[in-house]
Structure formats: structure tokens, C-alpha cells
Length: 249
Ligand code: IPE
Ligand code: IPE
Ligand code: MG
Image 1: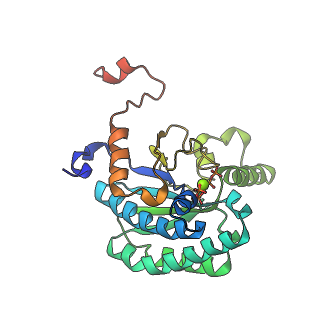
Image 2: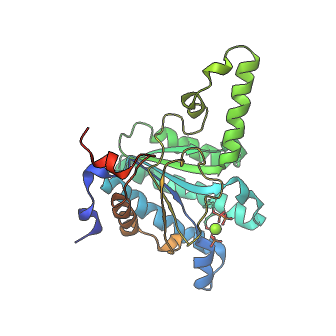
């Protein structure tokens, strides 16, 4: 029986965020250079996005390139940007076929112009799709996002359009790149690393974390289903006691 059939369809996380890590180590294991790992990682992206749709997930956010990743060797950064452009243009017809709409979060203006153009075209071409929303985090970091939000809020207070007493959690949420997107219930990180690496600090406040030793190029839809099943066996208490959750209201 496939893992998919074991999933309780009533309790599927509506938003899953993934730190796709381990491409470089996977390539090294194969005796190849790091870029080869990024190429193979695209096959995992395709399969996992398909699996997310099959499981009934509504939003999937993939951490594809962090603010800190700009500090990698230039050849690797250039290769990643080229891979991004070619992948987006090649995959757009499939996204349309699968009714997936593409979005992006991050400091998108820092991307090379060709990359940004391809991204915007694909976002536009898939914007009418009503199924899974695929959100790519590109040149993204949570500290950058929160700093931008604070700047904008401070400007509004300064120019008199916002009163300090009206600053609320909701207002802050509306200043983030993820405005309108529900917080992820599940965050997955591959490659055995147990850290957030500047990903969605605000939005992951109450997410369940799932870590796997598998490297990203080895992670496929069945691994996603395993993570969802693991999530379904957890009790999400949100500060309450276990008894409160099981008592009839
Ligand atoms: C994740 O794999 C992809 C990106 C960060 C772009 P890595 O490239 O970080 O692979 P490792 O962690 O070095 O193995
Ligand atoms: C996090 O992976 C960023 C992405 C997956 C895009 P990294 O490999 O860059 O993170 P660190 O350096 O191990 O924290
Ligand atoms: Mg890494």
C-alpha cells in the first residue's frame, strides 16, 4: 500500500515548508561537483510538488536560495541562477497541466534580471490555476523580511497613517512576504541538519518540525507522505493541556 493511502485526508497540513538541503553532499557522494547535485535536486522538486498535490496540500513553500547563499562561490551562484531560469521555463507547462500556481517570496529585485523576468512570466502564466500554490523562497531570509516589515511600519507611524496602538500581530503578518498565506503547520528539512537557517522565523512559530537524514536529491513524494503521516501522529496543543484537547467542549 502506498503511504499516500494511509494519510488521513481530514488532517493534511494545508501548508508545508521545506528546507531542501544536501544537494552538495549528495553530489560529492556520487563523485560529482556540487552543481550536479542541484540539477538532481530539481527532480525531487518535481516529484514532491506532484505528491503535495496528490495529498491535498494547499501551499508548499520551498527554500531554494537564501540571502546567505549569495556568499557561495560565484560559479555556484551563477549555476543556481541559470538552473532557476531553465527550470522555471521548462516546468511552467507542467504546472499549468497540474493546476499549480507559482508564487515567490524574498528580495526578488536582487535576482539577475533574466531570472526575475522568467519568474514573473511563469507567475503570470500560472496565476489562474486553482490547485496547489507553489511558493519559491528566493534570495529570502527571515531577518531581511522582518527588517523590511519594521521599516515600513515605522514609516507609516512617522507619516501619521498608523498609530502605535494599532500595531497588532495581524498588521505585522500583512507586512510580511507571506501576506494572505496561512502559516505552515509542518516544516521539513532534509540532510540531517537541525536548524532553521533564517527561514520563515515568524511563520514557523507553531509549526511541527520534521527532520530527515535523506539528502534533498534522495527525497521523493513517498518521503513527503511519510512526513505527513508523522505529523498526523502528533498532538498540537498550542499551550493547552492534553486533557483540554480531548475533553468535549
Ligand atoms: C541545498 O543544498 C541547496 C541550496 C542551498 C541552494 P546545499 O547546496 O546546501 O547542499 P549541502 O548542504 O552543501 O550538501
Ligand atoms: C538553507 O540551506 C538554504 C536553502 C536550502 C536554500 P544552507 O545549506 O544554505 O544552510 P546552512 O548554511 O547549512 O545553514
Ligand atoms: Mg546546505
